[in-house]
Length: 414
Image (tube, rainbow, N blue to C red; front, side, top):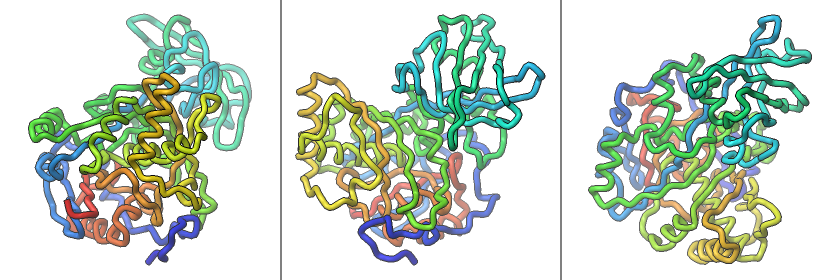
């Protein structure tokens, strides 16, 4: 069993594992989104429900927060002049824009960090891909500018040059399904690997807790008086990054960009102290990151010179006991002083046992891989009961990972 710590740098990832049989990994989505099963953990009690019953399982007067990012078709299968295939997986934009929203509207050319498949066979020169966009023939070329550890810098050019890069990816790209599914994407995935409320393009992996929400469930939530809010965190490929280090001190958490509207900050402030439940680990990390940015704002440490950022170990450094309301108010005052309608920031926040939650009281989430940072987050929320939850799910036929079943985790009586 894991040792009791207040600083997760001391944790061994090997204490957060379980045996996941391959047949328990869901390879395909169910015919209907809300047909998935729902494990409800409420103050130590575990019950088995259907996801369709989520609205009635939510505590009264809940504010439910969704991540409305949209997955882009980030895998590009290009060809060398000799005919050999080179796969490019777009990770994040570099130039002329590093902000994902601007990068997706870029025309003519751009530079991205990419993973390169069959890269050893691509010594030099251009690779290309013919595709159709907006009803017309188009061509994409790619040039490797630089190879770095873990990625390459790829310069893309395309014609017609007037196409925004978002349209290039829609016409030329494929959805980046999780690697453990070990299959190519299908037409069904184009719909089912997106949430019904996906809006802002930029993710290379789906916020999978939201895949269970159907239009009917969303409507039922509204009729029961459950209020909702949306944040946007663009999920990066790092979400699949395994923890290779024995101890968490040696693991580098990936960073991800997020956007929260000032109006959502006001909604969070007004709603407190009533229950706040995150849909997915990405929504949860966004909400908790708001607290730490509020601490920075309260100390006068947010400026327009640099993009606001939460570091991996910020919560575990001796420092703030700032009340949550004060942190949110400081962050809102910062936005108002800068005449900003939205907060644009990045986060590397690692939530693991020892973390003190400032924002949320519950979580809707899928079942995660052994020895992953997502499992550490669940363990931070449930304590040692994470193992009871996963043992129950394994013993009772739940489906695991991105297309698998769901859980509603409420650690305190509500």
